[in-house]
Amino acid sequence: MPSDPNALIQAFGLPVILIVFFYFMILRPQQKRQKEHQATINNLKRGDNVVLSSGVLGKIVRVEEKEVGVEIAQGVTVKVRKGMITEVTAKGDPAPANDPKN
Image (tube, rainbow, N blue to C red):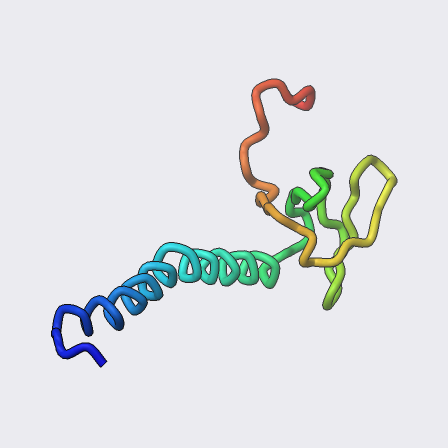
């Protein structure tokens, strides 16, 4: 066991500092994103426009406990697991300028 106090600080302090750094730079932001995503999933409602993890855009027409019905084209509805929804925009959000419905 080294008797030099600086050697003890280097031996035990550096790993502790690295663990704290790792937590605040990687784990904490990831946990925050997971909580935000879960809150978004829990607040899904009919009429919300969604983006699925595959990149497919659609509108929610039915909400169930673990799944939602997403209309991806007029008259085409698919059943999707809630966890596969990556982004949600409310139906009141403004449409893009190049949208033909304007």
